[in-house]
Image (tube, rainbow, N blue to C red; front, top):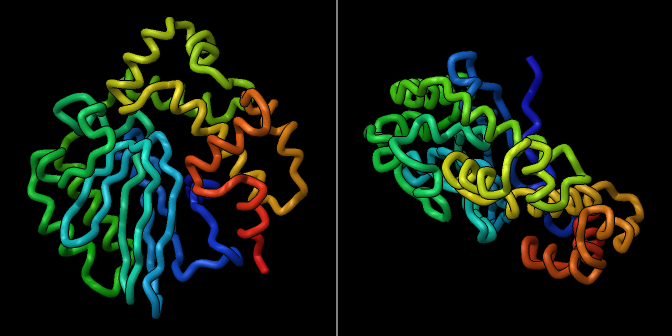
Amino acid sequence: MEVPGGYPEAVVRPEGGTWPFDVERVAPSAALAEFVDYYWLVRWHTREPYRQQVIPQPRMHLAAEDGRLLAHGVTRKPFFRTLTGTGHVLGAAFHPGGFRPLLNGSARALTGRVRTGADALGRDDRPAAARILRRPPDTARVVAVLEEYLLEAAPEPDATAREATALVGLARRSSDIVRAEQLAARAGTSLRGLQRLFAEYVGIGPKWVVRRFRVLEAAAAAHAGEPVDWAGLAHQLGFSDQAHLTRVFTQVVGTPPATYQGASRVS
């Protein structure tokens, strides 16, 4: 079975390019594959507190941490997690439209918020979280526990959720899509219709989604270790000029792209 790739470019690299943690990704069962893209299991051991940044993407996660299952809505704010000692976290990364079928309402209700599984899905999440967070974390065992919890929600196949997921995927794959209007045209719908679809199923608008993928492309270029024509890349990705790319990239990552590229090279 193919190992899910996720968005490796979204993990902000530290100076020197090394991390004190390991990430394992696992494909979902057939029963949940329409909703869950993959499960991720992070294990760490660090002598000193370690702060890791991840660039938010247009997808929701349900993660076992701090004794609960926590539903993380799409957020515009930078995401940081501080790792201490020895531990692990297991999460489900949903397809961009995949969490909406498990909810009783709109995905936008979770935007910028973190809610317990009990609040988001209506079922006590604490027993499942306790089983998942028991050490040591056997991958098959903890994934089975999380799948059991998700299957209790009895999500129904949803053609509109699949459409939302497909359109987010189109925005990710198509570097020539640099405006929401272009994505709407490719989808054969109005901009307003696309905005309503994304608000309901993804939890954030198409303009943000398109721009976020172009920023992630810039991050991938920085990670590649090759010289980058930042002015040319800015034009290719739909930014008005290099200064525009630098400003947006710095807002998202915390440092200009050229500086980030130099600092994150593996020594």
